[in-house]
Image 1: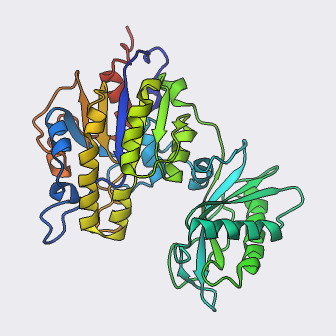
Image 2 (image 1 turned 120 degrees about the vertical axis):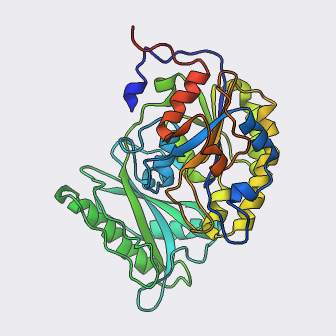
Image 3 (image 1 turned 90 degrees about the vertical axis):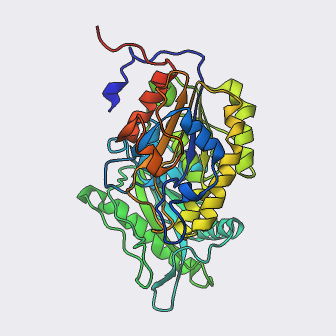
Length: 402
């Protein structure tokens, strides 16, 4: 998809682009609820915007494909989600500002609880606190030694989440997860999917075996599960590709990592959703592109809590005037993927999107929800197209060819 962005087409100007990304936005109707979460939620501000915008549906990766948050956000930022996909370990490391070096291998981890037979009874170790997490990471680092010529870093992320980074010569990321993502079974051994990764797999298993001994007496966090192995590589930044000085306003480490991966500056953590919206106004003069991320709807969808997701969507809607009063040249509202409360997980369903601009062909959509937006002027298309549409409506793309 990068062929859509030759240097000769991107131009710079003083326009402002805001992407409001409501994580897990899309939903499904549930019996007795009266529609999807968006249809049920009170969203007068988003409905008003939709009526003055061009709307449609977006497929994060491809029709029928359920996306992870990583490829979905890369598509939002205009990076082909297949070509540029990267394991979650790197995103976790970047999200805590870990100073990755070229060819480091990182994995995302969970502290977990095993029973006396070594089977997983809680993949999240009772959702231990971040403070407890820090103490456990220190305990592991003090007692575990991987190999003489390989360094490792074991760092807390948030709650029960951790990140493991390996640094040394010849490391590979062709590795299988040790997290089976299921209960009642034992953790998996890390295996190489390429013969050249055999030594790296051995190092991972050595680390896990030693850590297991160190944690054996812990009541809840007595094991570590790893997934999303990835080797760090440098991505071309959004300023290099699109001429956009970009700011990310996001509280969750993974999304901060994604933003850092594509060269965005990170705003300090905000106390709540309202703080994120207020931060946009505070930093508005300094950047061209703003990624404002709201995590909570996705979390409530994964909990299966339809009513809580509806409530949070209403809270987000009430804050939309904090954006519209700034009068950005382009305002996009969408999500990264659907997380229907009915399914309690990410799903393949396309996302509603609205694009507001002076130069948009306003369609006849009158409400911002999955069903209404299906009839919008943008139709249904790949999410990776969104950035070029935003740039065009901000007059940041010139004519291609003679």
